[in-house]
Length: 180
Length: 153
Image 1 (cartoon, rainbow over the protein chains, first blue to last red):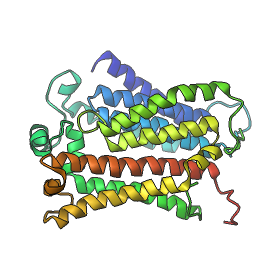
Image 2 (cartoon, rainbow over the protein chains, first blue to last red; image 1 turned 45 degrees about the vertical axis):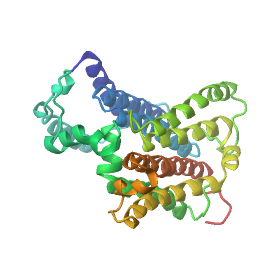
Image 3 (cartoon, chains in turn orange, red; image 1 turned 90 degrees about the vertical axis):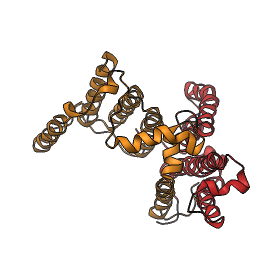
């Protein structure tokens, strides 16, 4: 992995831990926004610009704003302690999980981190077919869009309806029938 | 840290000026991502999110209530429901023309030889982008208004 990649991983790790440890919710939200921005850059570095765009818009943008609006009506914690107290049993469990998942990382093919063309994919036949046949099948050049809208159109339909249902669910919870 | 979300931040000249300068570019970028998603990174979801974020930015700079009244409930519900209708509609028209649900190739009599591409554009732009943009705006306005709607709930 390049120096930029290592720096981004370190940045994401530091901001993720800081989000948990900082006691002030406003600070935690801002740091969480920085974490999302780091993840967006990292996805772009890993040649996933579609995911990076989503992370930047939803993670860094919308989530941050929604959380800020939510805490606007709360109060800040009294006192000047910067860090929250750590729940050690939970921290140990999380640490063990992190080590377990991290131990699988060396077994991921890493060719595309180093500029090679072998993609990290679970089922190369299906993915290879998409990459090869997208233009002939659908007439668009962005394979991600082709998979979303054409090959997996019904899944995307379900996802779009889930987003719609989320809006309806919030209306129901708030006992209102209008968004504005 | 107790900010009334309905109060416009009229005193913050910096935020208002910054949003006024940035918003047209973000809107253009969002529309580009939406309409050019077939041939470059992005698509309806990302572009719709960016267009929704423009409205959130305006609300942050000029106050949630004026922005909410400017957008209006009809636009938000219309986009959300209309997006689902467009998505279902494209799928059902394909069935009506003898194909499977969302089988864009069957739309050729309506959309011409590039029916698959135009069918995908239709559900990305008219479906996904509209749903995502409107639900983001709606969630923001609902959260900003909170429970104080005066209806005793």
